[in-house]
Length: 348
Image (cartoon, rainbow, N blue to C red; front, side):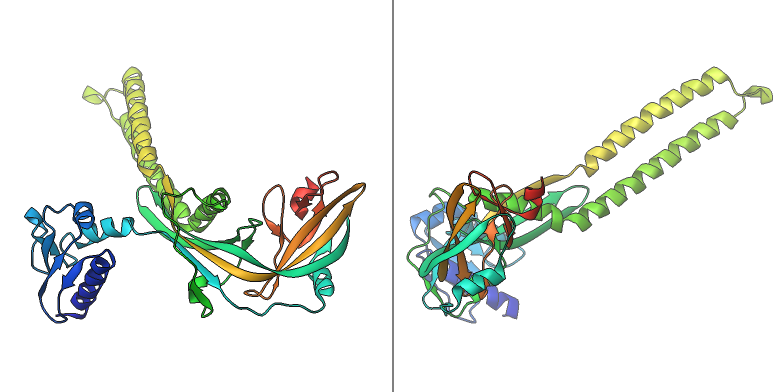
């Protein structure tokens, strides 16, 4: 058995056992047997609960076998099972170092207040949930491009943060049951989708530029070809060396122009871009943080804002702009609502 076959063997057995199947497939053996729960057999599309497993058992015809090789329907039936797996994981960081000294001074170093008087009030330890979203994006055109990317949000403020991958933290531990996909999406979902849409077009810029170059190249080829046809018709003489007939030349030009426009339309359809974006996973991580409350005075208005010192990045998180949602450390405030504004929104 090759190394790839052994990996497929182990993955298939682990996946089926995770879904409650009883698998009898000793290491090194070419085939095995699995007794599937009825719901697993239904998802895969098998008529029988007892199936054979192996690289040469066929494609599952008659509900008797599941192929475990890259040449058969292995990716199809494992994909069906993985699609039903929970896409949300719940974790927590039990302990973390929190800054407790000179908090007021640290706030003053981290933030610049543009148009308001800000006074430090108090700080205390809290537990805040952070959402790390994973998205899959694809753009289909004359060619196809795919990617996946992630980013993290403070679930309280919605601000995006450059956090380490939570699954890489040694302090991480499970925190209850993962949420079901059938549950309502978390409050950060709209914000996450907006960020993901902008991120997709940013990371896809090289692909889009490549497709634009191909389209321009193919359009030029078509234009050059059909202009050459027109030039040829203008040089072509009639019988006995008679000069070209102007009416015939004009008719040819109209026909060529019509055909060129049709070909260019087909080209535009072929290079049209269709983007898809979907969330594939959400990691919810509860982290102990230090929350500092600040009194903000703007003209006659007053409001308390809270900033968080995050032990994973070891500094304060930015405030989220109330208009664009971008995190900022250089903060202005609205006159009446005393809502925070980033520098760009403040200038508008």
